[in-house]
Length: 147
Image (cartoon, rainbow, N blue to C red; front, side):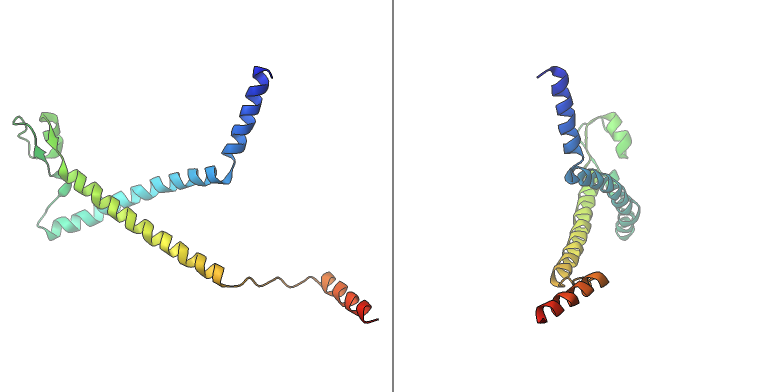
């Protein structure tokens, strides 16, 4: 078996692998997941965290940090990172809240999908009405059985 023949076979196997439903579904899921992540980040950063900040007197978690060096004297996280090592626990808290929200929304979506799936499985499938030709052939068969 030559190199060219092996390459052609490998390309054919790769094409078959890439065109399987699971791979395409996974790619679509990753793309939708990235878009969904952006929406959730906006929800947390632009809606939920400002409400929490307003309820706690202007608290903004994303800017909270603990300096790990005496050289850090800045009052905001961006400047503090430029001055030295900081423990950005506010950013971590914000990302943790993002994760909890994403996990909860995914739970609700999967729960709804499972409920719909159970309804589909519970409802018996109604067989389609036979065509006119099939009905006619059935009548002929029944008449022939009687004779």
